[in-house]
Length: 619
Image 1 (cartoon, helix red, strand yellow):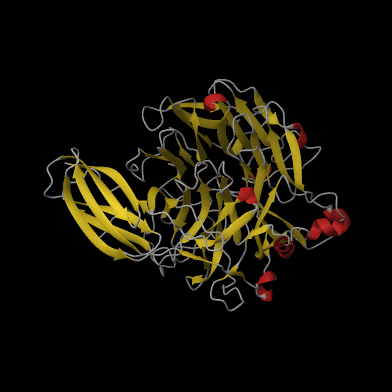
Image 2: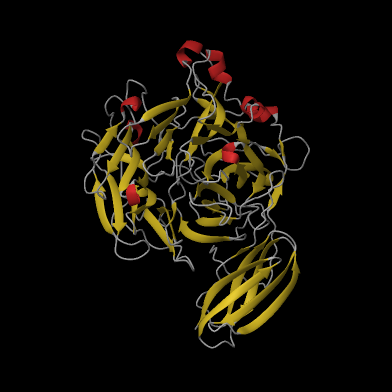
């Protein structure tokens, strides 16, 4: 169904949920639920199962957000949430990318879906791919002072490389498409992640994986899935680095997993990426010279399974996101869960989101028993390093979920993304199975977030970002946070949602259906013990230009008197509407413009002590 921002009522109230929830006790029977590990990551279009669609729920759009994309290809990542799919440029405009296809199950039209916010509104949410050939797994970044560039993969075989599209100015003009080859001797490269850095974003940095044998690729330099670092300092014309970094070669690791790696947003010439393949150490790679040299930091050292013979090992789950703060310190957020390496199983209901930064000790060089258990969420919680965990929303002390897990091959509380501004404030968002929300078969996941204070010294209360009635029965997954954000402008998160838990590709093998990508705007949570959303937020009116009526969506952080004035370009007040005292939450305001002559107008929303003015066009 179409999830456009169409408003049929004048006022619709929706409140965001935030509270000091307690950590829930996971029923012991759930901690014993074991799932076989994925043998082959998804890079194409296989959907080998057929299930009857459950039409129990209906999806609608609410809260302060915009729909920016639509697809039936529902796998954005095999591991870490895909950072780099939402980008803000210097003029405040935005670009969003995602893997788009509307032709299941072969998906011949798969490619990069692109949308642009011009400062007033987003473009169509179902535009064709921007490439001329089939691609997937896109990233978008600024290139130079005014340009933009996207990166996506083609396949694991035939010597295929990565496909780039660039143009001289973001949001406008024709794309120039070109390819970058894989390293010599590699069959192909997949699942790329791209950022740009250096002076004026002139350097392109990519991490990608050689095609594993399970995906039709070949072993490369002794690794069945080698992690490749690529760099271009001339806009993609040449690549002066395109190979395995020495500390990540076959003498250290047998392989890396699909999408088990993520970039931090670069700060000047400082670069950081993490590698979170659960069979390996938890690794940070850091460069302070724009990728010339790299320092390897082992955050958690993987024990010797062969020597210990353990069937119970607490590991990182493959989803992770690093952040570089203004002082150059690295912060790492990552999912954890328990695995059985001897029997190739994992336990999805045992996990959470862990936190580490460079001021903290690493989990290395301990005894086998210590390394096996140090990432146990109970231990992390006791040390203040578990920032996401199952929440007891109804206060009965137990996590009330069905025990039927959607197969993302990650923890039921995971997929973290984070941002920290120059003042040390920030936000961490993750996707979590949420109690008492199911379609009768499987539990739904919502997006949850917490404020960050003092460069990670303190975290605020939990906020269910999709907790209103509209999103109650939506599956909300794979958040991608915008690196720009702070107290003044809040934070923006792009995420995927649909009405069915799980995916058609990669896990549950649900029938292909409608999937949407929304960009959610989150006002900064100020309070430390109860971080309510304190800043009023006013959306751009839709439609704009308008002729008969137009809608403005506002978020009111607390009960406030709301008034809207419309003025012409000379400052003359044309209309003045008092909406009275509105409760905290989200409201849709309808403005009648049928009597206005065509031209430029300004509407000013007064909310308590706050005032926001925006421009609209009447035609």
